[in-house]
Image (tube, rainbow, N blue to C red; front, side, top):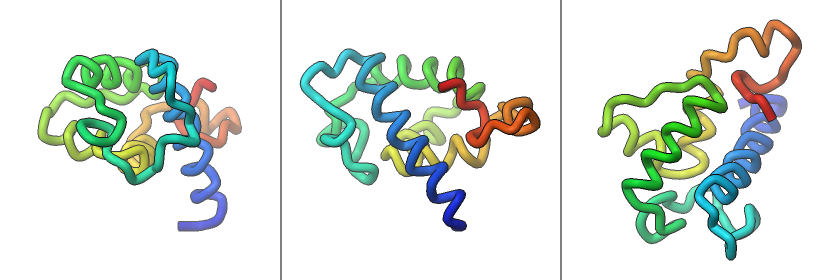
Amino acid sequence: MTRIENEKKVRLAHKLKCMIIERLELEEITPADVSNDDPIFGAGLGLDSLDALDLVLLLEKEFNIRITDPEQAKKILSTIDTLSEYILNHSKGEADKEKGGDTPGWKG
């Protein structure tokens, strides 16, 4: 991974943490409290299946990414790192790249 790709991933990971905390109203958690390799569900952030659905809808809206296969979703939504990598590799926001945006599909 190049330095620029790594910087994009770091910025995206921080953005995802902020979005998840805000969207799911995790009031006592800050982005610094969330490790990139901690599980998002269960013992990590403690999210459940309803939170997973909300997160999938958020990803579709913000990054134009559709996750329809539950088994694929488990892998993608495992950690902030796996989610960041998936977004960087599969985002459909090609228009943002052409306009000079540095993170595909990123509206923030």
